[in-house]
Image (cartoon, rainbow, N blue to C red):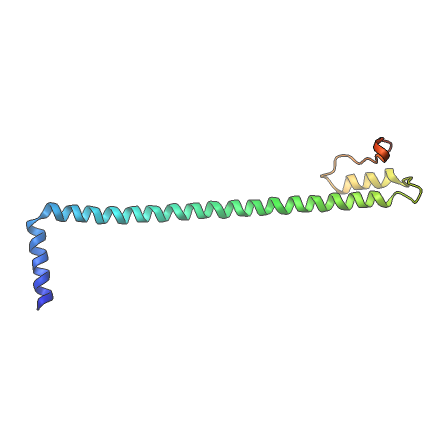
Length: 119
């Protein structure tokens, strides 16, 4: 009985004070709309960060793979050098390295800082 009495008081008050009721309704709807907008903004930002993270991971993997390829190519060239420090079959091996690895544009051996072997 008391609950129904309170409801009647609230409805009668809202009918006698329509400006206050409108103000509270406007305030409540504004808060709800701002909350929804903020949540949508957070979702968009999270998606952007996820896309950026994926792009950076891909770039990291590509750089790591390139460095491994360069290391392997350098090691292969190092194996062409005999015990006396003279390269054997440098031209043929260098050409094969250039053909197999497109990120390498040139292969050179520079003993003591003097450029001597270029395929």
